[in-house]
Image (tube, rainbow, N blue to C red; front, side, top):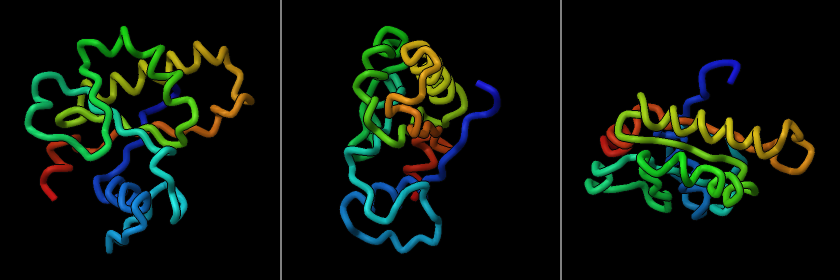
Length: 137
């Protein structure tokens, strides 16, 4: 990866999730999406381990960091048509960003540098502040 992973705020993620239901969040934060954004175009990946017991983000996919390396190739294939993929852990300081980096590396390996197959527009983010920040609101 050539630079730090882009971050998405909890307000932006909230706006994305609400846009999938057609409701207005009332937030002035502009999410990286169109106003009508189908849920099938968004994936939230939770890589917390035992700390996942404390709750989760609606519609997120739980893939513990302890199994992430093994499941990463399958995940790249499963998420190939998603426009936005967001990773998080408890604080998004270690596990979330590492999983996002591994996902991007595996995605590049499977694509072999070819972005013309429809996957090139996928954007990968890390949730700023992780689940702890999400839960504060």
